[in-house]
Image (cartoon, rainbow, N blue to C red; front, side, top):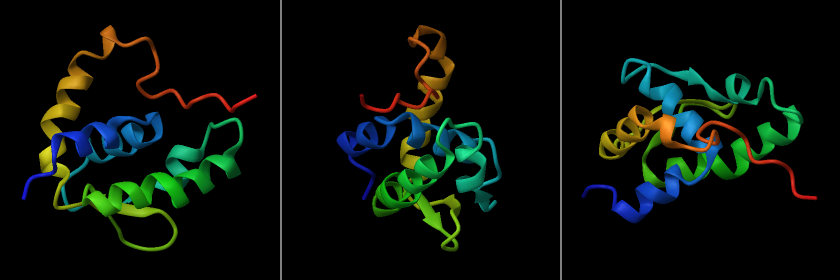
Amino acid sequence: MPLPFDDQLRALGSPERRRVMVELLGREPDTTVAIGSTLAAGEPNTERARLLLHHIHLPLLADMGVVVPTDADGHVQRGPSFGDIQPLLELLLANRDLWDGTFHAPRSAPD
C-alpha cells in the first residue's frame, strides 16, 4: 500500500526530516548513510540535535517505512516507502527558491 499523502506531508513537515530524506535522495538506493553525525554537525546544540534525531525524527520516518535503521548509531538507508515520497520531495527541491529559507534550516529552540 502506498504511503498516504497526509503521512508524506507529516514526514516532510520538519526541516530535520527533510534533511534526512534529501541526504538519502542523493545516494544509491541501497547505500547506508550515517545520518546522526552528518546532520547534527553544525547545529548550535549538537547533542540536542542528535537526541531529537534519534528519538523523534528517525523513529517517525522508520515507522512510515521511509527509512530503515541499520544500527543504533543513526545509520539508515532508504525504506520501502521512500519511493512513494520521492516525487513530492523532488518537486519541493525543484522549487526550493519559493521557500522562505527554512527548507533545511533547523527550527530555533523555544524561548
